[in-house]
Image (tube, rainbow, N blue to C red; front, side):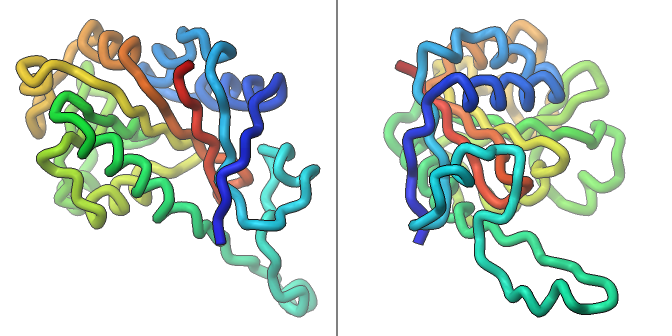
Amino acid sequence: MIEIKNVTGIESFQYIRKQLSRGRSLSTFINDLSIENGSVYAFVPGGTQEEKIHAFENGGIYSFDKELLNTEHPVIPVQNNARPLLIGEIQKHLNADKKNCCLFEEPILWPSDSKLTTFGFDYVYLGGEQVFYFFNKGNANAEKLDEAILISDDYIFLCVLSSLDLSTQTNFLPSKEITTDLLRVFAKSAFSFFVGAYDGEGYLMWVKP
């Protein structure tokens, strides 16, 4: 069972800012917010030791078969049971108000990347170099959200929950180029955001005060 633990403090704020500093434009604009005024929560398995909860850089928050370490080429699969909880938080936000929306920042793909066609996934882009996946109440499908998490989770992960007028949301039509100013407005209106943690095994959630 996954629990949500309050981990607000210097260590969590430092970790979040470090993660955001590695991202693209959305990460940069979110990093400009007064993050330290908000609260931070960790998605971790119930019963996780306190020292592991605060070791945001490290994996190992799930138990595993130690016999796997005795094999010739030990490979421990990454376990992350927090994804359904993350999807639930996103859907709750999107369904609460028509103005509510979210963006996933794609960390590595470019608009010209053939993988986007392979995914068959709706996206918007910035400057021909950056890709983002947009969701609102109209496409708050759990399966699509799950795909967006899997696609955009790489060396970093960022999903931002925000709110925009419906007229402004029309600028996020599939395969449409957005502006830096629009992305900045989206970031400034953020209610909450999620970053990857525990070496791919969980997430931290920042919540606006």
